[in-house]
Amino acid sequence: MSNGLVSLYKKYEDYFPIGAAVNPQSLKIHRDLLINQFNSLTSENHMKFEALQPEKGVFNFTVADELTAFAKEHNKLVRGHTLVWHNQNPAWLFQDDDGNRVNRDTLLARLKEHAETVMQRYKDTVYCWDVVNEAVEDTGPEVLRQRSPWLEIIGEDFIEQAFIIAHEANPDALLFYNDYNESEPAKRDKIYQLVKGLKEKDVPIHGVGLQAHWNIYGPSIDVIREAIEKYAELGVVLHVTEMDLSMFEFHDRRTDLTEPTEEMLERQAQRYEEIFSLFREYKDVVTNVTLWGAADDMTWLHNFPVRGRTNWPLLFDMKHNPKPAFDRIIKF
Ligand code: HAH
Image (cartoon, rainbow, N blue to C red; front, top):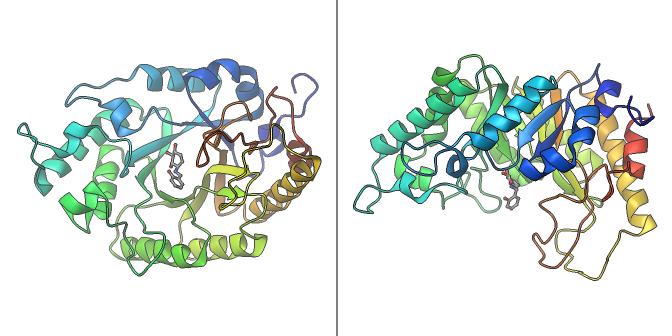
């Protein structure tokens, strides 16, 4: 308890850790909220490749060290995000000294050196890693996202190679495949096939990360339940890695709102309530639930994907006070 408010993570102690994505600013302005309400942290941007190794062989651990020190001091878990992704990579990674694309062996060697350096450094603080992020194509017949330098340079086995490298770098870390639109049946089935294939080859993968960037209209609870059931069949654990509930449907472009309507807040509260109730039902397989931020004053959904639009997707409001959604998920 602090400020008379129930602690979310303490309330969920018998279920799963409750996490929040953080950045250097939020570690300051959300400090009390993070200490009192959350017991798992994910670096929003500062454990990505371009942040940790901006130049070849030159690592920058300043922000990641601050985050892990904070986590250690306050007894928080840390999820590592992320090793292999098609975004936020430094340009040097895929090029040789002449600016030509490197070959497969060079890129694999660079990944190995990166993973070993980073995973060894944080072996006592980071308990799991999103080894591969967003490698599956959203629509159409292709399983793998075609426009990825990792696929283009290494080939189809870049995913299994990444897991093997990560497992060697730290055999104790839990290793995840992480993606968005993970509950949409078509993409869900592709992710399922991908992970099934990895398991059949004995590739060291331990979990599927459901990003859970959802909104107050969908996906429906039945669709989310089906996704959880399907992924659970794989015999892996599930982490909800980046949850938020946008106030807007995906194709809604409105930018006129300066604050959420009562109706939106109520709908959001109902959605958080039923979704958290579902997570509790599946607590044997859902073993971490992380939100992509702590309070509405700092979310990636301001100005994205619609410029000039404010959003209110989290459990605490602009002033860090609990929203109706918070009240609802601690009532059980
Ligand atoms: C996530 N992508 C990424 O995993 C995370 O690293 C980033 O900070 C924010 C969200 C979600 C996503 C996207 O990047 C593009 C389209 C849809 C969803």
